[in-house]
Length: 304
Image (tube, rainbow, N blue to C red):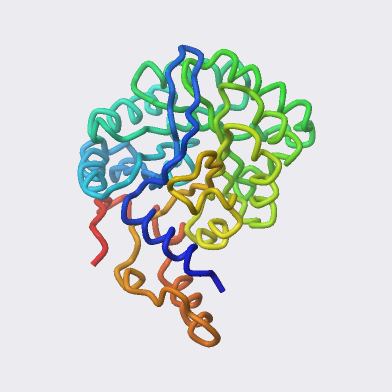
């Protein structure tokens, strides 16, 4: 059962779309970016002929912009970046940047299979408006992706990136979980500001939070399915908006908080706690229905 401080913080954070953190991070050009907050993943809409539907993309962004999110994530798994050409990937980032509110942050997925290609894509995405690069683990040569190889890859990308780098581990799609020891080592790099962990292992997320607590490094839980559990394993300083050293836990939401949860019991106990958990699982969005909908009607709508 989550205590009243946790529930209070969850509600406050969801309503504000932002958690206060003292730390900020400098990119290669000295630009400081604080990535704390909630970021919905932006889907890539397609036409019936499999072309990117930029008109629908912009329409989606205008509607998402009405919510108090900290920013947006483009070209993660929901963005279906493997199906885009390099020019389409850059055009999507450019269109999103132009359509989204100027005060929001744009986290753009720039990962490629080679280090050189990732560097080039990261630099290009920075030029068209990305505030930070979200770099997925290279995975084609899965058996060769040791901690040492991944540390070398991410270090080179971070060294040459003009914007901050966010590590991205999504084992369900890559078959590769970025090792915790590699994450801890990479957290010490001044241009690597955090990790989006979409593996769903809350114990692992808590371990990463603990082992990187001395660094200016944040952990984004990459699915609403383990949002509350991930929040609970965050550093205690996270719960206090006035804390001097907030090493926060932040996450990505697939969609705005459903209305039935807005008035949820703040401190459920016994059967009420189980019922709340089951209700939450039933309401959370999922991957399966997303792609077919994009073909014909891709625009998002506020939660009823």
